[in-house]
Image (cartoon, rainbow, N blue to C red; front, side, top):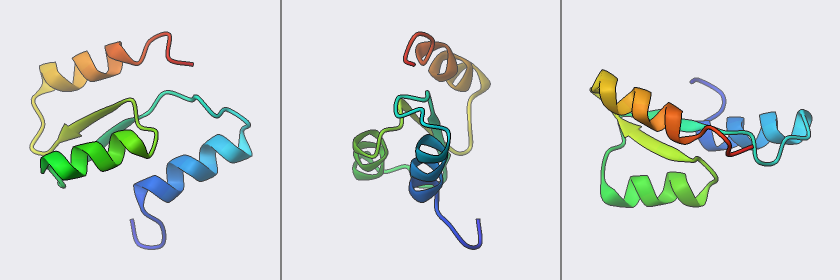
Amino acid sequence: MPDIDGYELLAKIRSEFRQPDLPAVALTAFASPEDRQKALRAGFHAHVAKPIEVEELIAAIGATRGAA
């Protein structure tokens, strides 16, 4: 994204819609264990690295059910 990163986008969406626990999955090329921890600390409920495995993405989305 040219003007904002995913962390900022998630914070902005949650703030503007007043949904602090809005479920979110980080779908990213940043795949190190440190990147995963950063995403989870930033409030993402799951971290899926590219290239994705469809089953992993589906499981990550499913795991966010009930998060909000």
